[in-house]
Image (cartoon, rainbow, N blue to C red; front, side, top):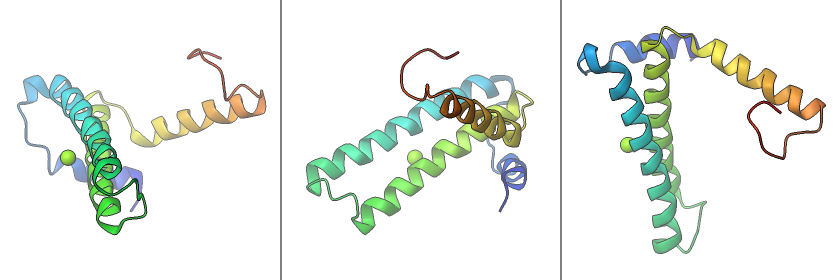
Length: 109
Ligand SMILES: [Mg+2]
């Protein structure tokens, strides 16, 4: 699988009103990110923080996958290319690494 193919695939599984697509995808992304947090919370509570638990890993993978789907749909609805976003993020972090500013704060450091 590559990112371009995945972005195209998400179009075939997108079911929401086109006129609300951007808001719908943004809300879905936030909801699924919350579900990731919920799985981790329940692992702490119910599995003694065993993050190697097979069931936990499977459930977390499902929720992170949902995050990726909504993030991809949001980008696609905005006419953006997921590969460009990954590349831009990689370049930003590489620059911070080279300038020794990975830690700290500020979006434009
Ligand atoms: Mg989910």
